[in-house]
Image (cartoon, rainbow, N blue to C red; front, side, top):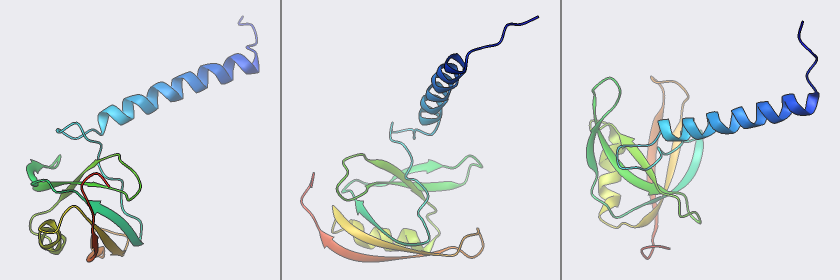
Length: 131
């Protein structure tokens, strides 16, 4: 017969396990370059800083070719790996903006599913490195 466990002990255990799982999840989503992946862009407009780095060749889990850009959010120094399909219109628009990088770009996402999601990119302004 087991003894009842105190609520505080249960909460402490659950908090410790959740923290451990969160750390494991962060490690699991790191890109090959040691950068975490850019979170999924929400529907609507999102400002992103496109860093002045050459895109790297990479693959998704299904072995499809991807180009990996480096990006971050304005006002935040945490850098992210941003994988883009090289056959997508988004890739072409990012290449055009890469020539002015580092720069702030406005990404407009429409649609939710794999078949109806579209992105458009608008150049906002060039910034100084590290800004």
